[in-house]
Every structure is written in C-alpha cells, then in structure tokens.
Image 1 (spheres, rainbow, N blue to C red):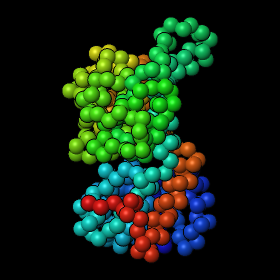
Image 2: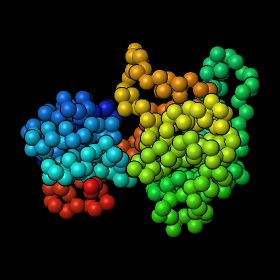
Image 3: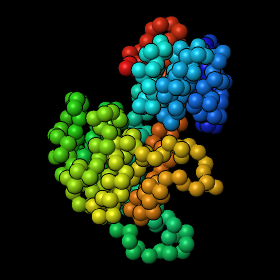
Image 4: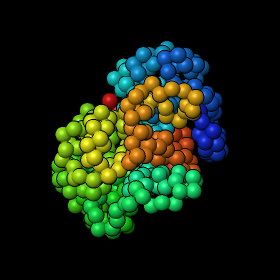
Length: 330
C-alpha cells in the first residue's frame, strides 16, 4: 500500500518511520502541505491519504480524492468532524481514525493548564526572567478539597477523573453513557456539574448536540471564579460568549489547547504574520487565560501509538479485517 502523508511535521516523520519497520508492505511519501482542494490532486497514484484534525476533508476535496482513485482516508487523530462523511460514503471511501492513542497525554495536559492558570505560572515565569520577584497577582487556590466537573468520561475524561481524584478533589461528571469503572465519580446532569464545580474540564466530541455547549447560558450557571479547561474541540465553546464571561470576571482562569479560530494557526509558525482573527488576539490579551498550540497529544508515547494504529488501520483495510472501533461511519 502506498500512502500520501499530508501536513508532515518532523515529529510525524520520525514516529511513522520508526513504526514502519513493523509494516514492510506499506510505503509512505511525506508531503509538507496539508490536504486541501489545491493539494488533493497530489494523491494520484496512491492507495490512501493520511490526514489530520486540521485537514480539509470537505465534499469538494473528497470528490478530488475520488477522481484520483483514493479508497482510504486515514485520520491520524481521534476527531473526524472535519470529514464530510456523506461525501466519503457517496464515493465509496473508507475512513479510519485513531480513537485512543494516549488518553493520559491529553488529560495530563488538561491538568497542566488548570494548574498553570491557577498558580499564574505564565505570569510568574515572565516576572522572574525580568528580575521581578514580587508575589503580587500570583495568588492561587488549593485544588485539594475542591470539586472537579468532568464533561465527557471516555478514555481521556476518565484519565482526567483519576488525576483529579489523585489531587484530593471531589469528582463529578456528566456523560450520556456513564463509565461504570469510575466508581469514585458522582454522575449528574450538566447543569449540576456547571453549578457545583470549581474546575470544569471538557472531554467530549464535537457533535450537533455539543456545538457551543459552553455559551452565555451555560456560563451563567457556573460558579464565580471557576477554572475552565478545554483540550477537546474548540467549537464546544462559543468564543464570543467566553470573552464576555472573562470580561465579567466570571472565571478565575481559562486554559485552552483548542479554540474555534485555530484552523490557520494549528502547528504553524506564524511569528511574522498578523492574526486575521481579532477574537484570537482578544483571548491572548487576558492575563488569566493560557492558550497552547493544540499540543495535548504531543508526547513520544502518544505519537508512537498514533503511528502504529494508523498503519495497522491501513493493513486492516487491505486485509478487509476492520477494527470496528477505528472505522468511522456516517
């Protein structure tokens, strides 16, 4: 099988090249450009393409891939909301993903964001580098004894629940399908989670039902001085409403590894560019907000797991022996 790998970064190539040793029947050509309407034609002569969470897999792109006789789209990520599944079904394409690579990697990043905004690490780091050792503006709160509200308790959310329990927090959660293995978690409705939690961490997929689940209404239900963390999907939060809540001093801190306007920024060096979105600039202007580079997944262990699962998905397609959990269906 020949795979064209879009949006290649150095760490992608290193991890996939290492994993390829176990898959001698697969060859990969790496492309720096991301999958788009312009670059889809590059896939001619390949059996499959490998795309990521920021790739354009819209109907128009899928149509071009189909014209190049691509039958398999390998998503090297868990999310697939950027894939037009109706179009892939129309053109007889199979879409496979990596539903679980290292849930602990993302959960640990979520807790890092929570701790960093709580203890103002971003501010103290800059102050000390400028020989300012004042503690003014650096007061945080203890997580011990507080309530953590976890929205979504799949593999990543479950890992976050365990981390919060380890901090001595009471853990409550909202999920349509409670995880029975989390016997220390109190499941309740979303409104109760919002009203009761000192830390709210989002770990659910982006669907029609979860789009903008954090909005003016749900923010109004939260405790004052709550810490909000999102390492899942940016569009779970209505950014304009979030900014209004920050300005109203509703939040003690906000940690975002994802945000609605991230598409043109994800994994790119834009040091010499102007930000097209004033919304992103406004988020970055608040002293109690930390935004990271959609890097929750970025550990050596997670990258290797992503590589191995993606390549195994390719072999499963060849052998027509699918892991149903990895198969994306409309």
